[in-house]
Length: 118
Image 1: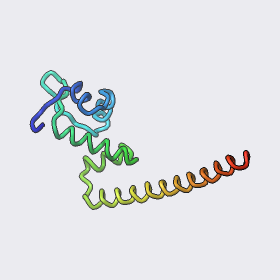
Image 2: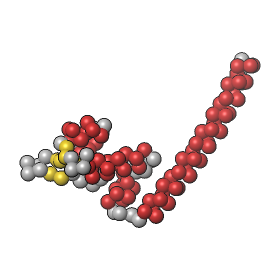
Image 3: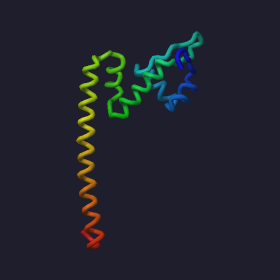
Image 4: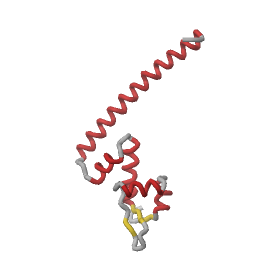
């Protein structure tokens, strides 16, 4: 894939990201594809890597503004690692809360099945 270049349509197809989203990511400064002489966008391997970072961080709940800071303002790796650790702790706390809720729900279902009501 090294040295490969893609039109926006092909890049959207390869990445699974809609063209409109790619346009938006460019508008807000997350992606910066090169432009051909005719003005058409051309995406390369570096853009695909950047897009994978965006998708990964977005799936972890980071805002697009925060992602832009990570990607383009070259925050120190330590800051990124600390932020990811904080996000990991938040997700673990949310999972623990969901586990508690599921446990309560399971007990309530058992009562309803045995008693026919709460």
